[in-house]
Amino acid sequence: MLSDRMQKALNGQLNAEIYSSYLYLSMNAYFKSANLDGFASWMYAQAQEELMHAMKFYDFVHQRGGRVLLSAIDTPPTDWDSPLAVFEATLQHEQKVTGFINELVEIAMEEHDHATQIFLQWFVTEQVEEEESVGSVLEQLKLLGDARQGLFMMDREMALRQAPSGSVESA
Ligand code: FEO
Image: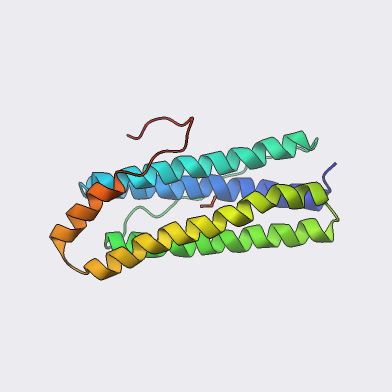
């Protein structure tokens, strides 16, 4: 059984993961409007991955006999100055999410909730991968500077990212 404090914190993270999906979908729309379809498809896969994260929290709360309480999702930003600005915002966002996951682990430890601690380990590892993959895109964009040609070549590479298995194919 989840403590009230743990349940509230897990529901908060469910909201944060859905917001992440919403944010990346907004970035997908931004790239679509800039005709950078490879970047757009990368963000689409990212948005789907976040929904998968959200559903892991959704299912876990139920598995533990808890109550899922859905809440309003904030409106994400819709415009950025450049692809570089998008990935700077993405890295900042992922670093914030890493902080949320770490706080959840702290709560689970304080509540002596071992099952939740084990459940959260997957997310601790996932955040290391997320920050690494976003960081490497950001580094490539920094190297490109204002080179338009390089950006279009990178757009083709970005299209190669696969959507998570079981998800709807990229739009
Ligand atoms: Fe669900 Fe990108 O963290």
